[in-house]
Length: 109
Image 1 (cartoon, rainbow, N blue to C red):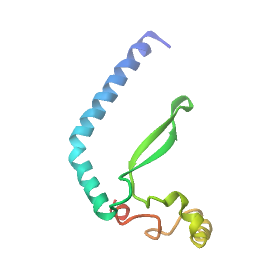
Image 2: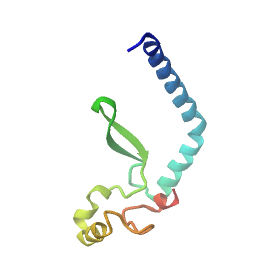
Image 3: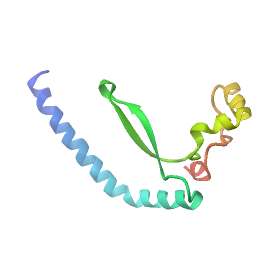
Image 4: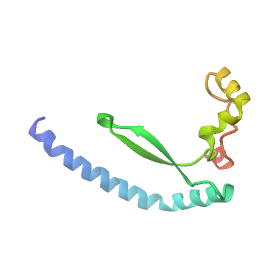
């Protein structure tokens, strides 16, 4: 790694963190609205969905997303094999707007 590259990496990291903080502050009103809409449509389910991802150098991390599917979407097909057959026959997707795992909130997004 060259000397300019060594200086660039910490600078880039600082810009990434500062930009993220500014973005969170500026969008916090939107996040609050999304949280309220989520809770109106599903009082008992979690607001966020934690998803495992693999990043640089195969480092695993949790990605946090607003939940747009049922809380039990991961196990839905075990209880509804007929829907799984439709899913498989349709090239592992449901026709647009026909996914039974998506919540009303998810259809808005």
